[in-house]
Length: 146
Image (cartoon, rainbow, N blue to C red):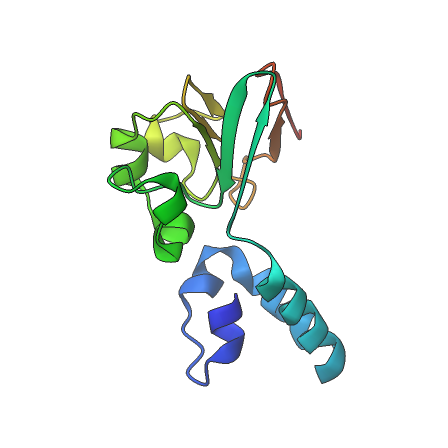
């Protein structure tokens, strides 16, 4: 999103992946308010790490590069990685991510993927028949929109 609004050429990849609704809403705002929203988004961290009840969690958009320590992740991987993460991550820290629809990871799956070391939450809210999902990270219980 930030790259889209910072660029004169307006690459359409973000739009094609669901950003069109956000782009349309931001375009309706006056320049000052739009700038405030974009500045807020730019100030957010790319990941959040915490421990609770003896479990370590690392939350990010897409996942992590299994070849790097969690402290040395490339921002591009945190935002865009796919197969390299969910096919090869073996760490003990639980990675919480979205970005890749769970049906792509396990064909036909429509519920969050919850394993010992990852929780994948993208259940296709942007797709026909998709849903928004949330998970209690400690219990593994999840809820989905109708």
